[in-house]
Amino acid sequence: MTDESTSRAYLWFDLEFTSLDIEEAAILQLAMLITDVNLRRLESDDGGLCIHVRPPPDVPVSPWVREHLAGLLLKCDGPSAVAPDAVESLVCDYVDRHMGSPAPEIDRRPVIAGNSVHMDLFLARRLLPRLIDRCHYRILDVTSFKLQWEDWLQGDPFDKDDRDLVKRYFPDASLPAEAGTHDAYYDIQASIAELSYYRTHFGRATEAR
Image (cartoon, rainbow, N blue to C red; front, side, top):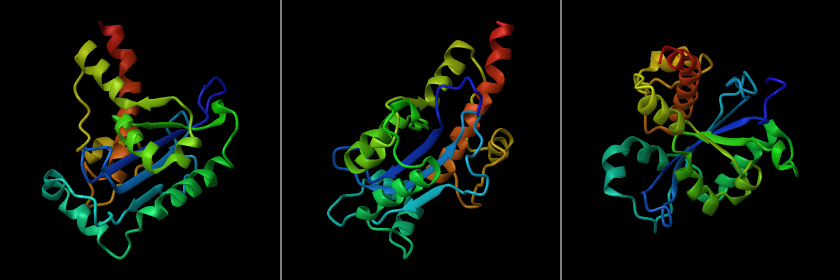
């Protein structure tokens, strides 16, 4: 972490959920990983947090999720899945283990980061309020960098499906063999790699304009 950094840490966060109806949706998968501002894991031996959640029986699952996330639904019905009311404690314990007790000063709290992470925050504010209380009011949305990279600089898109590319720009990535996009644990690591990619190339691209 640089001495000049404003943020204490980035808390990379992604959810997969039962539908896009945020007011009614339930969490299916939660992934989290904490880095410093230089995108290095806070704990090199920490693989991050990945939880599969058993959805409540009264919450409908959208047809899109049933078609495209069938493998995830199987894991959410498996023996390692946790009950919805256990998720918040697991998440808060993970954050506190790495960041210490919740800081009263807002600037000492980690900044939530991810791709289009505002969508995940909508759900987290309803279902994980104690997590929100541990975090800064700011968010770091990699999508903002993506839009500037593609709209302003006409740069080549970052291919999140390219596992070698993800590893190149986030060498600490731990990518399960079967995981890909729409897997929350894969996606947070791909988002870190994507931000690293923009950091690497933004300066060169602007100088060439």
